[in-house]
Length: 77
Image (cartoon, rainbow, N blue to C red; front, side):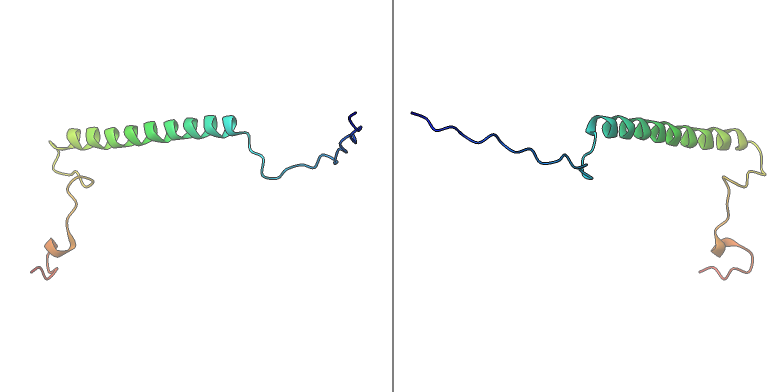
C-alpha cells in the first residue's frame, strides 16, 4: 500500500522585483522606436526642403557654411 504524502507547505508570496510585463515593454519600445524614426525622417526631409528652397538665395547660411581654413586670414594650406 502507498504511504500518505505530506501536503506541500506554501511559502508566503513575495513581490519579485525582477518580474517584467514583457508585452507592455515590447509595445512601449516599438511605439517609441516608431515615433523617433518618423521624427528623424521629418527632420531630415525638412532640412533638405529648406536648403532646396534657399539655393536660389545667396544668403543661405545653413547650407553654405564656411570652413575655418577658407576664412580670410585663416592660414589655409
